[in-house]
Length: 252
Image 1: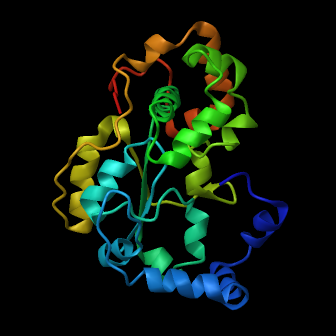
Image 2: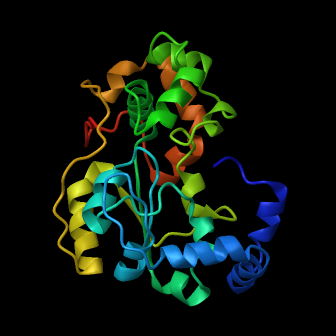
């Protein structure tokens, strides 16, 4: 997932019903495959399925390194449909379904998320593709500070899905398209609300932790703090975060 092309931006300005039908007609093979995937039950930590979305009448937008693995495994028994941005679901669900289903996501403090993503990939990530990506793009940096100073910028963050700004996953035509944005810093209370909305009883287990122990703030100098503030300014503004947030010291 990278930045939207000019064509995609124009296409997404069309009415949902037209987007859905054009995709069904011109990409019939892909469309039919996705519709079949809505019927398949799969379980497992490395499995993906749309069926849980239909069964629970929800669409979970899984922003990378924002607590989504734990939520998806406990709610769906699998990874849901991965890290797809919300506009991708316009091609899968018709207008009535998309409007009806509870669309939600989890966001995370951008400074904390960047630390988590870096150490997650450094430790090998989720699968060999993550490890290979780290080796190709980030292994030359001696530590987190070096990585932020010499790699983190508005272009590079689109080269790896774990670094893409969070707002990109939940907006369509620059407008938030989910019904609810939860925060990982309020994870337990958020899950209680999700249980109520979906009439579920999710029992949490913690998955996909990054291998680092310190408070995220200790990894930053004043200079690297400012770099992240500038590069992720839209996330910071949209979700209302600041560097000095102290309500949660994540180790995810």
